[in-house]
Length: 250
Image (cartoon, rainbow, N blue to C red):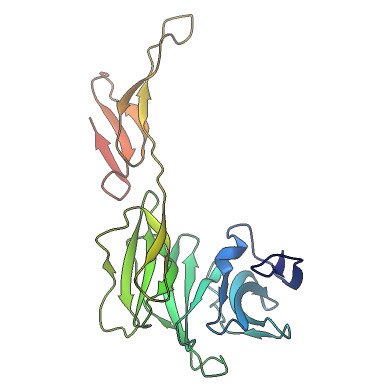
């Protein structure tokens, strides 16, 4: 996959580098500008770890490429979704321990953007699918990120210092891909929803279905895999209406 640059005023683009980002991620999710706009943090496969993504620095001027992270062998997908702190001295990224489990890690950088020590894990989102796209607050003290489950997402906040646990924000239901303005007084994010309901359709003996399907069980989340009881009076089904996958009956 090619990485290209183009002026915000338009004109011809030019190719900066080639990357091997799998289709699991969009290329935009694996890019981050340094505060001075001279470097890009890019996700790519390393020769010694094919199939696991690492974070690299890429110089916009010279094309110099420098590796920043080394995901462990038990990391299924590796390191993705990098973001720089406002002063450029900290890099946050999501490290996937499995396909659906990710946590935020912080890597300190020196003035030349070389790693200082090893990344430190900042979240332990055991009950959710993972901590993904993130943004620093304007003072660099906190990170706003998305924590997801199979059926919903929400916005969270965690201090960089490690002095407190992540807390869920009182807004941003089904919110993801949050981005704070540089002044810190505006927050933009995506709201997504996937609604799945259970319908009932009467069947005649021989001529196929007749009439319209009627909504039988519904919520604002997933309701699926219905099963009638032997007497036909109750239905068991899987629902995410509480925020987790559970078996319900009605």
